[in-house]
Length: 409
Image 1 (tube, one colour):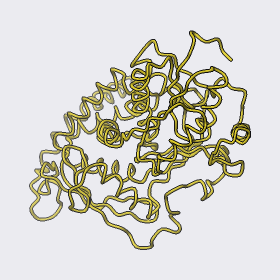
Image 2 (tube, one colour):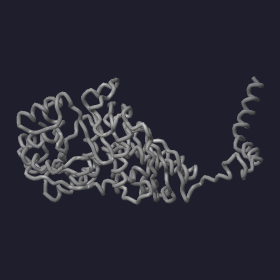
Image 3 (tube, helix red, strand yellow):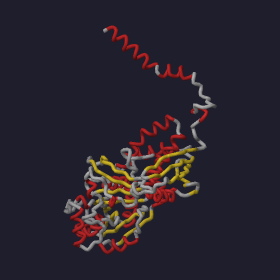
């Protein structure tokens, strides 16, 4: 075990009740001789967290704090991501990455309240979450000690952790036959480990937790209508609802139709490539709809420039830099672009696909009289000749110079 900076008497652990953190309570007590307080965040992960109270105490925790942060998660983290259309490496909507700074924020708040010496997390030494938790913790308190037992303990595989859990009679859901590591919240689910570590293997159906296989999804498309105000989803099929309610309903609908399955090999922050599988039906639908509405309401220059900052914005979230000055500055820019992103988008969900089929807005920049090729065309096509002459002038001048140089040779 690594040398400790100072005596640790009390630790607040980010506790999910999964394999790593279930084992971790006992391990921290044995190796640090400290009191362990567990903290679990209710992020809408689709499970009853009440049983965690008994499980944490039975495993050795002195107490457990369970906090419902669903509304805060949606308002302060998910909505900014939707407004920015963020997808890491063009695919991953960052459900897990968005939740980590919020969990770390509350972890630190409870540590201050409990006068704890350190906080701890269950992330591995080769994953992204260790960075997200620790960078956020240091941003909020540069002097806090952060423990990462998975980087220290003698167990090298999940199978060894399962054996440790059996030895101490710690109840865990992971098994050697189904060793998936799963993280879920109301915005999406990440699935890794087991056979998924081979990028050539097709993900088995038992890896997916909520989405229907597109092959078994309904044969009839489901048409939905999403309404936005200033980039925020506020209506579903004409009925006003909160963003949280809309996300929950879209998850149900999207899952039924097999929407939101994502399979990619992504570049982790620590420098390795990792095969990841995600289920994110609500995120897929919302980002698709939001982008369609922006295509109608944003002017060309703003739209094109916004697209250039999306990869960086997504990267900052993925890297755990939510509280960085640049992330905040980009968020301010994105917020400014949403002033007129109000209107409705109609989409069809069908066997794993989400297809936009209609969009309208009171701030629409689409002018049919300019776009049409039919009667009523108001576009002055004769103006195009002069425009092309001026637009292409630099290339024309360059071509003349090149032509002259070739002749002189």
